[in-house]
Amino acid sequence: MRTAIYPGSFDPLTNGHLDVLQRATKLFDRVIVAIARNESKNPLFSLDERLAMMKSAIVPMKNVRADIFEGLLVEYATQQKAQAIIRGLRAISDFEFEFQMALMNRKLAENIETIFMTPRETYTFLSSRIVKEIARLGGDVSPFVPPHVAAALKKKLKAAQ
Image (cartoon, rainbow, N blue to C red; front, side, top):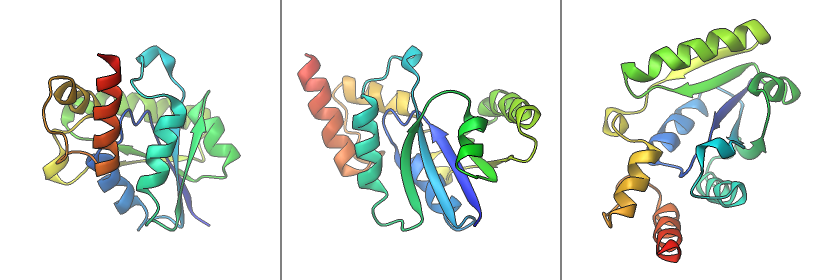
């Protein structure tokens, strides 16, 4: 069984993330969305909230499951018997960091490949950070995230006021 890990903070999940994920499901028998525990990023949503939002979004995708991980990604990928790590690239500016990470991951676990995927051009400008900023300023994020994520953003930001 060909397994890939699609890691990220997904704070929040965007349509760009889902686009990459949907295309990865065509390449692999199983894709695990691995939500990273990274408190240094000061996430808006808790790990449990991000996991719940992801689980809701992946219901139609039969070969996808969501999980939480911490520590080294390649160690998690090895535990899951994954052959690949999926990384999304929106712009050339993403490439340098992602390339360095891919090389380091290869050094740590040479049997796990990193595959770079670009989202549809509709989503190349999209990031979780931008979505949160639009939502904080009262803008409509519904074109950029699934409906349940838009509702969660609205509720979270209203509670913070």
